[in-house]
Length: 118
Image (cartoon, rainbow, N blue to C red; front, side, top):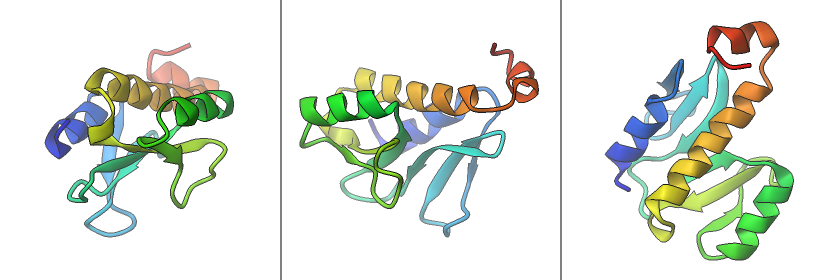
């Protein structure tokens, strides 16, 4: 997946926005003010930090040790750093969607209802 496609996919989610709180080189994708993906789109190799269920995070790291590692500069129990070129696009899309869904699930019910999610 290219940096442009990664950015476009992250922005496809309902109410998602791209912000640059850490400087112009770091894209932070948020839903209603909460981070679900963080990446430096011009980095080589391209990586993205994604939220993950703690048990699932461990399983993914074991299955893809060269591509998925504990989140760099993040809570390593809940975040993974994924090397984009090292996993299939389908899996990457699933991981991004899971990250978005986990963040949305943590929002107050009134906020979730704004997103048409239970």
